[in-house]
Image (cartoon, rainbow, N blue to C red; front, side, top):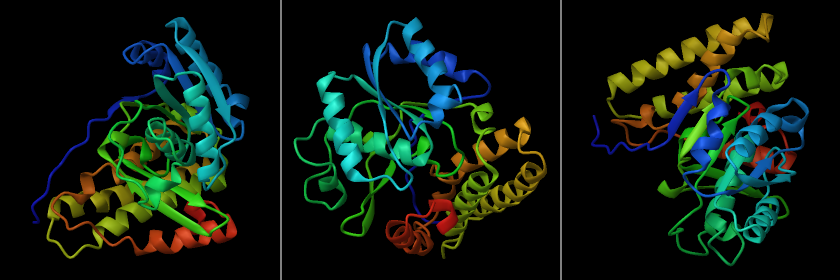
Length: 286
Protein backbone atom coordinates (compact mmCIF):
# COMPACT_ATOMS: atom_id res chain seq x y z
CA UNK A 1 0.00 0.00 0.00
CA UNK A 2 1.02 3.59 -0.63
CA UNK A 3 1.27 6.14 2.18
CA UNK A 4 -1.83 8.31 2.31
CA UNK A 5 -3.59 11.08 4.18
CA UNK A 6 -7.34 10.81 4.67
CA UNK A 7 -9.52 13.84 5.31
CA UNK A 8 -13.19 14.44 4.70
CA UNK A 9 -15.01 16.95 6.92
CA UNK A 10 -18.39 16.85 5.12
CA UNK A 11 -21.35 15.93 7.30
CA UNK A 12 -24.01 13.85 5.55
CA UNK A 13 -27.71 13.99 6.36
CA UNK A 14 -29.30 11.06 4.54
CA UNK A 15 -32.90 9.96 4.17
CA UNK A 16 -36.48 11.11 3.71
CA UNK A 17 -37.18 14.72 4.69
CA UNK A 18 -33.59 15.31 5.84
CA UNK A 19 -33.80 18.81 4.28
CA UNK A 20 -36.03 19.78 7.20
CA UNK A 21 -32.78 20.12 9.20
CA UNK A 22 -31.26 22.61 6.75
CA UNK A 23 -32.56 25.79 8.36
CA UNK A 24 -31.19 25.04 11.82
CA UNK A 25 -27.82 24.14 10.35
CA UNK A 26 -27.78 27.32 8.25
CA UNK A 27 -28.16 29.46 11.40
CA UNK A 28 -24.60 28.49 12.33
CA UNK A 29 -23.26 30.49 9.39
CA UNK A 30 -25.41 33.61 9.31
CA UNK A 31 -28.81 34.75 8.09
CA UNK A 32 -28.37 35.38 4.35
CA UNK A 33 -28.09 32.63 1.77
CA UNK A 34 -27.71 32.47 -1.99
CA UNK A 35 -29.60 29.45 -3.32
CA UNK A 36 -28.33 28.19 -6.68
CA UNK A 37 -30.48 25.99 -8.93
CA UNK A 38 -30.40 24.77 -12.52
CA UNK A 39 -32.99 25.38 -15.22
CA UNK A 40 -35.99 25.11 -12.92
CA UNK A 41 -36.63 21.42 -12.22
CA UNK A 42 -36.01 21.97 -8.50
CA UNK A 43 -38.77 24.57 -8.57
CA UNK A 44 -41.18 22.40 -10.56
CA UNK A 45 -40.84 19.26 -8.46
CA UNK A 46 -41.19 21.01 -5.11
CA UNK A 47 -37.65 20.53 -3.80
CA UNK A 48 -36.92 24.26 -3.80
CA UNK A 49 -40.12 24.84 -1.84
CA UNK A 50 -38.90 22.41 0.84
CA UNK A 51 -35.59 24.25 1.06
CA UNK A 52 -37.24 27.68 1.26
CA UNK A 53 -39.62 26.47 3.96
CA UNK A 54 -36.82 25.14 6.14
CA UNK A 55 -34.80 28.34 5.76
CA UNK A 56 -37.78 30.62 6.43
CA UNK A 57 -38.73 28.73 9.59
CA UNK A 58 -35.22 29.41 10.91
CA UNK A 59 -35.23 33.08 9.96
CA UNK A 60 -32.76 32.73 7.08
CA UNK A 61 -33.15 35.24 4.25
CA UNK A 62 -32.32 34.05 0.76
CA UNK A 63 -32.13 34.89 -2.92
CA UNK A 64 -32.59 32.24 -5.61
CA UNK A 65 -30.16 32.29 -8.54
CA UNK A 66 -31.46 30.23 -11.45
CA UNK A 67 -29.86 29.22 -14.72
CA UNK A 68 -27.02 26.74 -14.25
CA UNK A 69 -26.88 24.38 -17.22
CA UNK A 70 -25.52 20.89 -17.63
CA UNK A 71 -21.77 21.25 -18.27
CA UNK A 72 -21.63 24.44 -16.20
CA UNK A 73 -20.01 27.56 -17.63
CA UNK A 74 -17.77 29.95 -15.74
CA UNK A 75 -19.71 33.04 -16.91
CA UNK A 76 -22.82 31.84 -15.05
CA UNK A 77 -20.75 31.30 -11.92
CA UNK A 78 -19.36 34.84 -12.24
CA UNK A 79 -22.93 36.21 -12.39
CA UNK A 80 -23.82 34.22 -9.28
CA UNK A 81 -20.78 35.65 -7.49
CA UNK A 82 -22.08 39.14 -8.23
CA UNK A 83 -25.48 38.26 -6.71
CA UNK A 84 -23.84 36.72 -3.64
CA UNK A 85 -21.85 39.91 -3.09
CA UNK A 86 -24.92 42.11 -3.63
CA UNK A 87 -26.85 40.39 -0.85
CA UNK A 88 -23.79 39.95 1.42
CA UNK A 89 -24.35 36.19 1.49
CA UNK A 90 -23.05 34.20 4.44
CA UNK A 91 -23.46 30.84 2.71
CA UNK A 92 -24.16 29.18 -0.63
CA UNK A 93 -26.92 26.56 -0.92
CA UNK A 94 -26.89 24.62 -4.21
CA UNK A 95 -30.04 22.61 -4.93
CA UNK A 96 -29.33 20.25 -7.80
CA UNK A 97 -26.90 17.77 -9.27
CA UNK A 98 -23.20 17.95 -10.00
CA UNK A 99 -23.36 20.95 -12.31
CA UNK A 100 -25.18 23.07 -9.74
CA UNK A 101 -22.95 22.02 -6.85
CA UNK A 102 -19.75 22.51 -8.87
CA UNK A 103 -20.95 26.00 -9.80
CA UNK A 104 -21.73 26.70 -6.15
CA UNK A 105 -18.19 25.71 -5.18
CA UNK A 106 -16.85 28.17 -7.73
CA UNK A 107 -19.10 30.88 -6.30
CA UNK A 108 -18.03 30.07 -2.74
CA UNK A 109 -14.37 30.78 -3.51
CA UNK A 110 -15.12 33.55 -6.02
CA UNK A 111 -16.94 35.54 -3.35
CA UNK A 112 -13.61 36.62 -1.86
CA UNK A 113 -11.92 37.31 -5.20
CA UNK A 114 -12.13 40.38 -7.43
CA UNK A 115 -11.56 38.65 -10.77
CA UNK A 116 -13.32 35.88 -12.68
CA UNK A 117 -13.59 32.46 -11.07
CA UNK A 118 -12.06 31.06 -14.27
CA UNK A 119 -8.73 32.40 -12.99
CA UNK A 120 -8.64 29.64 -10.37
CA UNK A 121 -9.13 26.90 -12.96
CA UNK A 122 -6.38 28.14 -15.28
CA UNK A 123 -4.07 28.88 -12.34
CA UNK A 124 -3.93 32.58 -13.16
CA UNK A 125 -4.24 33.33 -9.46
CA UNK A 126 -3.20 31.61 -6.26
CA UNK A 127 -5.42 29.06 -4.57
CA UNK A 128 -8.22 30.63 -2.51
CA UNK A 129 -7.47 31.44 1.10
CA UNK A 130 -11.13 31.33 2.15
CA UNK A 131 -14.54 30.41 0.81
CA UNK A 132 -18.16 30.73 1.86
CA UNK A 133 -19.66 27.65 3.54
CA UNK A 134 -21.60 25.26 1.31
CA UNK A 135 -24.80 23.49 2.34
CA UNK A 136 -25.73 21.17 -0.52
CA UNK A 137 -29.09 19.64 -1.39
CA UNK A 138 -28.48 16.82 -3.86
CA UNK A 139 -31.10 15.96 -6.49
CA UNK A 140 -29.12 13.66 -8.82
CA UNK A 141 -26.93 10.70 -7.87
CA UNK A 142 -23.85 10.83 -10.08
CA UNK A 143 -20.73 12.92 -9.56
CA UNK A 144 -20.00 12.60 -5.84
CA UNK A 145 -19.25 16.32 -5.61
CA UNK A 146 -21.53 16.51 -2.56
CA UNK A 147 -18.76 14.93 -0.45
CA UNK A 148 -15.49 16.04 -2.00
CA UNK A 149 -13.36 19.12 -2.64
CA UNK A 150 -13.48 19.17 -6.43
CA UNK A 151 -15.31 21.29 -9.00
CA UNK A 152 -15.32 21.26 -12.81
CA UNK A 153 -16.20 24.30 -14.95
CA UNK A 154 -15.91 24.98 -18.66
CA UNK A 155 -15.10 27.88 -20.94
CA UNK A 156 -17.29 27.09 -23.93
CA UNK A 157 -15.96 29.82 -26.23
CA UNK A 158 -12.39 28.56 -25.79
CA UNK A 159 -13.34 24.87 -25.81
CA UNK A 160 -11.76 24.26 -22.40
CA UNK A 161 -13.03 22.35 -19.38
CA UNK A 162 -10.94 22.14 -16.23
CA UNK A 163 -11.19 20.87 -12.70
CA UNK A 164 -10.05 22.52 -9.49
CA UNK A 165 -9.77 21.29 -5.94
CA UNK A 166 -9.27 22.86 -2.52
CA UNK A 167 -9.98 21.67 1.03
CA UNK A 168 -12.02 24.86 1.39
CA UNK A 169 -14.57 23.45 -1.05
CA UNK A 170 -15.72 20.49 0.98
CA UNK A 171 -19.41 21.11 1.73
CA UNK A 172 -20.14 21.70 5.39
CA UNK A 173 -23.25 19.53 5.14
CA UNK A 174 -24.87 17.68 2.25
CA UNK A 175 -28.51 16.62 2.34
CA UNK A 176 -29.24 13.40 0.48
CA UNK A 177 -32.93 12.58 0.22
CA UNK A 178 -33.36 9.66 -2.21
CA UNK A 179 -36.98 10.69 -2.77
CA UNK A 180 -35.67 13.78 -4.56
CA UNK A 181 -34.19 11.57 -7.28
CA UNK A 182 -37.38 9.66 -8.13
CA UNK A 183 -38.35 12.31 -10.67
CA UNK A 184 -35.05 11.97 -12.56
CA UNK A 185 -35.69 10.52 -16.05
CA UNK A 186 -34.36 7.04 -16.70
CA UNK A 187 -31.74 8.21 -19.20
CA UNK A 188 -30.21 10.64 -16.69
CA UNK A 189 -30.46 8.00 -13.96
CA UNK A 190 -28.40 5.72 -16.22
CA UNK A 191 -25.91 8.51 -16.91
CA UNK A 192 -25.44 8.96 -13.17
CA UNK A 193 -24.80 5.25 -12.69
CA UNK A 194 -22.29 5.34 -15.55
CA UNK A 195 -20.60 8.26 -13.83
CA UNK A 196 -20.22 6.52 -10.47
CA UNK A 197 -18.93 3.34 -12.13
CA UNK A 198 -16.40 5.38 -14.13
CA UNK A 199 -15.13 7.05 -10.94
CA UNK A 200 -14.76 3.66 -9.34
CA UNK A 201 -12.94 2.07 -12.28
CA UNK A 202 -10.55 4.99 -12.65
CA UNK A 203 -9.46 4.57 -9.04
CA UNK A 204 -9.41 0.77 -9.27
CA UNK A 205 -6.99 0.79 -12.21
CA UNK A 206 -4.06 2.02 -10.19
CA UNK A 207 -0.83 0.00 -9.93
CA UNK A 208 -0.81 0.24 -6.13
CA UNK A 209 -1.62 -2.77 -3.98
CA UNK A 210 -4.59 -1.60 -1.91
CA UNK A 211 -6.78 -4.69 -1.42
CA UNK A 212 -9.40 -3.10 0.83
CA UNK A 213 -9.92 -0.15 -1.53
CA UNK A 214 -10.15 -2.58 -4.46
CA UNK A 215 -12.66 -4.78 -2.63
CA UNK A 216 -14.86 -1.79 -1.85
CA UNK A 217 -14.60 -0.66 -5.48
CA UNK A 218 -15.71 -4.07 -6.74
CA UNK A 219 -18.71 -4.04 -4.40
CA UNK A 220 -19.68 -0.51 -5.48
CA UNK A 221 -19.74 -1.58 -9.14
CA UNK A 222 -21.64 -4.79 -8.39
CA UNK A 223 -24.26 -2.97 -6.33
CA UNK A 224 -24.58 -0.17 -8.87
CA UNK A 225 -25.45 -2.75 -11.54
CA UNK A 226 -27.85 -4.55 -9.20
CA UNK A 227 -29.83 -1.48 -8.18
CA UNK A 228 -29.55 0.09 -11.61
CA UNK A 229 -31.34 -2.89 -13.11
CA UNK A 230 -34.04 -2.61 -10.45
CA UNK A 231 -34.58 1.05 -11.38
CA UNK A 232 -34.74 0.14 -15.06
CA UNK A 233 -37.94 -1.81 -14.31
CA UNK A 234 -39.15 0.26 -11.34
CA UNK A 235 -37.91 3.89 -11.59
CA UNK A 236 -39.80 4.96 -8.44
CA UNK A 237 -38.25 2.30 -6.20
CA UNK A 238 -37.10 4.26 -3.14
CA UNK A 239 -34.72 1.61 -1.79
CA UNK A 240 -32.94 1.31 -5.12
CA UNK A 241 -32.74 5.11 -5.41
CA UNK A 242 -31.28 5.29 -1.90
CA UNK A 243 -28.60 2.73 -2.65
CA UNK A 244 -27.59 4.36 -5.93
CA UNK A 245 -27.40 7.74 -4.19
CA UNK A 246 -25.04 6.49 -1.49
CA UNK A 247 -22.96 4.46 -3.95
CA UNK A 248 -22.38 7.60 -6.04
CA UNK A 249 -21.25 9.52 -2.96
CA UNK A 250 -18.91 6.74 -1.82
CA UNK A 251 -17.38 6.41 -5.28
CA UNK A 252 -15.66 9.79 -5.05
CA UNK A 253 -15.40 10.84 -1.41
CA UNK A 254 -11.80 9.69 -1.03
CA UNK A 255 -12.46 6.18 0.26
CA UNK A 256 -11.30 4.40 -2.90
CA UNK A 257 -8.06 6.39 -3.17
CA UNK A 258 -6.73 5.26 0.20
CA UNK A 259 -3.50 3.32 -0.25
CA UNK A 260 -3.25 4.27 -3.93
CA UNK A 261 -1.21 6.67 -6.05
CA UNK A 262 -4.29 8.44 -7.37
CA UNK A 263 -5.76 6.33 -10.15
CA UNK A 264 -5.99 6.73 -13.91
CA UNK A 265 -8.34 9.56 -14.90
CA UNK A 266 -7.85 9.36 -18.65
CA UNK A 267 -11.50 8.56 -19.29
CA UNK A 268 -12.57 11.79 -17.59
CA UNK A 269 -10.01 13.70 -19.61
CA UNK A 270 -11.51 12.42 -22.84
CA UNK A 271 -15.05 13.10 -21.66
CA UNK A 272 -14.33 16.69 -20.75
CA UNK A 273 -13.37 17.27 -24.37
CA UNK A 274 -16.56 15.59 -25.59
CA UNK A 275 -18.87 17.58 -23.34
CA UNK A 276 -17.29 20.97 -24.02
CA UNK A 277 -17.33 20.36 -27.78
CA UNK A 278 -20.73 18.68 -28.16
CA UNK A 279 -22.59 19.68 -24.95
CA UNK A 280 -23.51 16.12 -24.03
CA UNK A 281 -24.32 15.02 -20.49
CA UNK A 282 -21.24 14.11 -18.50
CA UNK A 283 -22.39 10.60 -17.65
CA UNK A 284 -23.40 9.94 -21.24
CA UNK A 285 -19.96 11.04 -22.37
CA UNK A 286 -18.30 8.70 -19.91
